[in-house]
Length: 111
Image (cartoon, rainbow, N blue to C red; front, side, top):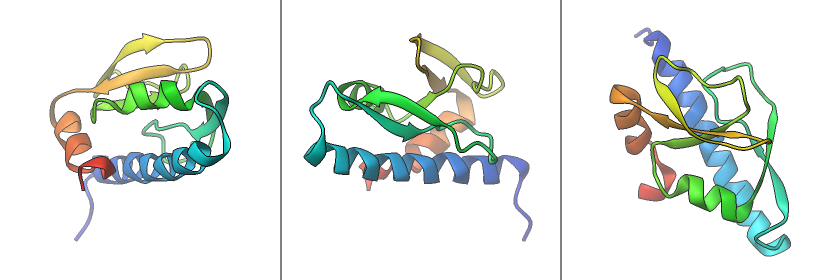
């Protein structure tokens, strides 16, 4: 069966979120809450492998909502999300509609 165009994008976001959860787990043992860690950009561009610098505390605040993702400025997709926070280092985007539902369904913290 062929995937819808959005399917690959959503799998990419879910994979990067999984990787970032592991990065944070390792960071818990190695870095204080206020020291920046390099997370993967959680944008929907399948080719993006850029890094986002955020502290564990910042990442935890972002992950408090399953529909929130951390992305680099310029990596937001206004077709499925809107910016809810902006810093010099990253944006926090919130998924909307079906994309929000899929983000909630694929949230590794809900398993």
